[in-house]
Length: 107
Image 1 (cartoon, rainbow, N blue to C red):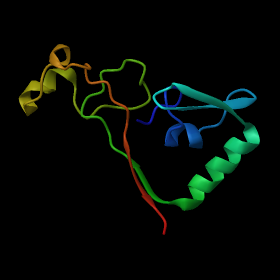
Image 2 (cartoon, rainbow, N blue to C red; image 1 turned 180 degrees about the horizontal axis):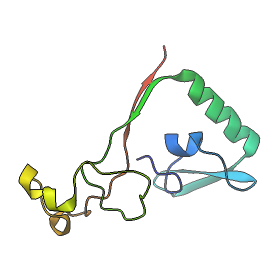
Image 3 (cartoon, one colour; image 1 turned 90 degrees about the horizontal axis):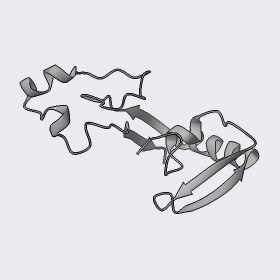
């Protein structure tokens, strides 16, 4: 997934401006937690940026998460069924979208 403040040290988190005096690195679905210094985080971010050739976040067909206000869905909830998709309340995760990226690293 590509959440900023959840269970991973995602691309989104690595490339976002840190808040506070450390960055929490979570792994193993949030079971492992380590605090990185801002310098360690900056080094990780710099390494990642230097090794990515292509980065693209796929837009959500429909994002059921009301917290995602800065990203637009391609469809409105009432358009889902006309595309053969289940209604929001019929989807087991209610169309929660984690904005999975396509990433191509440099060789």
